Every structure is written in C-alpha cells, then in structure tokens.
Image (cartoon, rainbow, N blue to C red; front, side, top):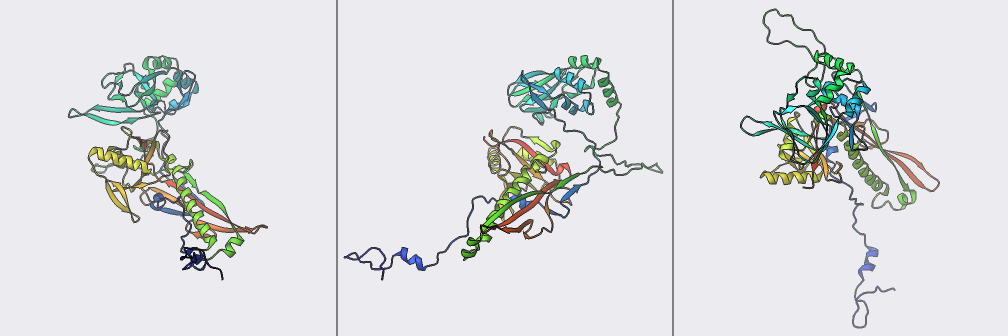
Length: 467
C-alpha cells in the first residue's frame, strides 16, 4: 500500500491522507468557461427587432426633394486648405447649380483666415460683406436677447458656413444678424462680396440660376423638404377647396441584411470523451455566440452601410457647446424629436456627463432598464455602449432615438425562419467531419438597422470626455 506524503508524526510517518491525494477520489466543483468579452449589449436589447423574410427591408417615405447635406468639403492643397468646387452647390443660393467651371473659379477666390479661440469672427449689426466657410474648428453663434442677455443660436463646425445670403447678389451688403465667435482655434475660408460680384458679372449661367431662384421656382414643399399636401382652413361659405394627393419616393431606400459568421471547429475526440459534466460542443457554441452578439452590436453602431452613427441625417447632428456633454446639450437633443426612448453613449461619455451635472449642481436621474439601474436624463435612460468609438483626442458621440415601426422610429432588422436556428436570430448549421476527425459548424446571424424617418435619430458630436 502506498502512503501519501504529508506532515508526519515524530518519526515522519503521515497521520492522515494528504489533500492532494484525496482530490483523486473527489469531484471538483467547477464553473462553465468564463469570458471577459461580454458587455451589457443594451442597444441590442432596446431596439425593437423586425423579422425580414425576404432579406431586404424597404423604407417607403413621402416624396422628399433633395436638399443636399448643406456641408462644404475641403481638400488639402500646397498652401494649406481649399474648397472642393462641386460642394459649393450645397450653399442655399447655389443649390442645383452644376457649372463646374464657374464653381471652380468661385472656389479659387476664397482666401484663408485664421482665428484664435475667443476671437470675434463676425459682429452683430456690422456689414455682412463676405461668405465664410469653416474648414476647421468650432464657432459659437449668439444674438442679442430681449432682456440684455445673449441668445445662444448654436455651434457650427467643419463644413458649415456663415453669410451665404451674400450670394443672392444684392448690390448693397446686408448686416450680420448675429455674432460669431471662435470657440477653438479656427481655419476659415472667406469669399469677399466684391470678388463674388466680379465673377457674377461675367458668368451668365450663374446670373440666370440666381434669377430663377429669386423667382421662386421649384415644387412646393414643407419644412422637412417633403412634397406639400395642399389644405384649406378658416374658410367660410362655398369656397373652392384645393385638390391634392400624397406623393411617394420613386426609389425608396432598401436595407439588405448584413451577415456575421464564423466556422466553429470541435474535435470529435473532445466532444466524445470530455462531454461530462459539461457538453464541450455546447460550451464552445455559447462562447462563440456571445462573441457574435458583441460583433452584431458593433455593426449596428459602426457599419458604413447601415450603422446608426453613419446613417443619422446631417440636419439631426449637433455639436456640443463647450466640448464636454452638458445638460444643455442633452436637452437640445431631446427637443429635436418626439418620444425619445433612450440615449446611447460610451461609458466615458456618461461619466463626463455626470461630471458636468456636478458642476451645474444637478443630480442626474436613474431608472431601471431590463432589470438594471442606469443613468437617465429627463426620465430618458442613458444606455452604456462601448462600441461607440472614442478618438485619440478623446472625442466621441452620443445618440438619442425614437424606436418602433408604429412611431416611425429606429428598428433593428433580423433574418426570419433561419434554417437550423439555434436561438433567436442565430443559426448553427452542421457542415462536415473532416479526415482529421474535426467537426465544423457554420454559425450565422443576419442583422441591419433602419431609420424610418430622419428625426428618429439624433447625434451629439464632438463630445469631449477628457475634461
């Protein structure tokens, strides 16, 4: 008989069985395999998911006239920065103007200006004798208020402009109706009114375009750019009522489902001999699907085709007033849409917002979401999502959205009736056992996201989480 080594008596003989030997006859208590890659995935839980049997979801809308992005693009040139000529047609007075030669000549007349933080760019009630394009930096716009206080009109950033009414070719310059101040160091491109009028005098196509615009040409549309529905109200007697119809987009956007897939390999020897007390194949699948779900949420946020950060309407993007996310910034996001269901922000952005609340002497709300207490503002949950990127400079974004088909909101799209569906939206399909005894399974999920109307999704950009 073999005696286990252990602490002995006076002559070194063990008095009891050693624990190392005892474990050979005992069953250990063990956990299933753990992973650090699992996050809350609140966005996947919060989105209402619509089953898409055909693999494509079409968003039908009322006819909307293309108003463009309203943003001018820039290119790096030898002296510094220049305007990309075709994008000048994003300015209101030049919308629809496509004479590239004239636009190029116009772009060449812009001159570069540098303004330091705090410097006034345009003063209220002074002559508006130039068009200003913001190539870099952030500009705050204010106007005199009724009670001696300045009214905050917004923050402009790269691609936006000031003084576009100069392009209406008035003989006398108007006056600035606001004060524009550089919030950061800014690079601007300026088009003096005199240089613009000189080009206008020798460009018949531009002059004709401006005349047609001044005559009010174009189809009637509402403030959202949709084809107008003619209505009559306040009439008495037998007034002639207008006739109308609701026009639809002829080429509505279609969302094709994107795929997240992998091939899981499990050796038959492992599955056969080491399946107790835990099924090895089942545990491999569980961990693989957890990683797949994490990637699904990443795609919903960041995919270039359907990701929410890239599909927010440009008119629903606002920039922060001072850098960090303040209660004022979140209030502006909320007031731009109805029935906001939740914010989505990186955890660092939520912490930055809490710091701003402390600075304001405010205490943010908290609410319960899917059994978890989360920070809220105005009763709207702020869901953490680490898939929202944070740049090297510490800038990120905060999203807010209305959800559901009934409310014309944001929806998630997933495949319907998948073959070999393992759990909702995920299929696990047996592929083969190769000549090395390795079993392969194809693990697939299909997803997309759709913004049914532009104001369903808003984004606060340039959120500084470092201060």
